[in-house]
Image (cartoon, rainbow, N blue to C red; front, side, top):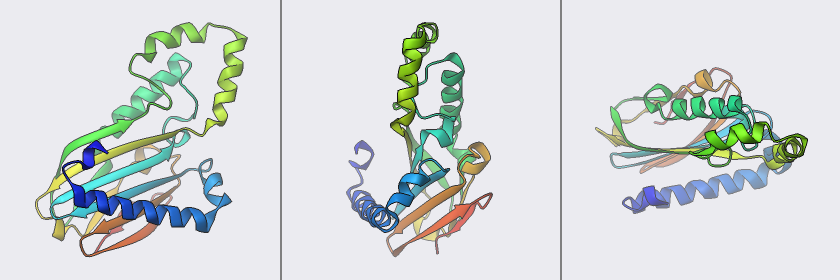
Length: 201
């Protein structure tokens, strides 16, 4: 919520977005739960004046290949690489109609890793079968990762589309549900496979 503090109208747009997501959940019911395991993710765009915010929500498995707390050096390495990719917003998103520059990005991977976990992981990796059984239990936790990107654009009203390159870096995302909200309207679309472009206007 801190990102919205200076942008109350964007907060209202985001609340409207949550309402859209809630409706989608009620419409799809059990299918949405299955989607968590089958490569689905959600992207929300909110444009107000010249401010643009992009929010990504995805099951951890789509991003790092597992959904439990990282328990080995290999898993920590996978999480570190994924975080670096998510922080490379210039590679993930590009805009048509107006130029935008990133002001702030916030990546939340706390469901699977913490900043000081690299040292602890080595000890857990050699802890024995008891810890391994706990690891198996955590695989059913369906952990979610999120990222929020805030941009300032030259002319928000002129943004006509966005190219989303998430599939290039996270090919496990097979179905990306995108919802957008602007001063003039709202819409939704699903990108599947290698489709990248979303027309907003």
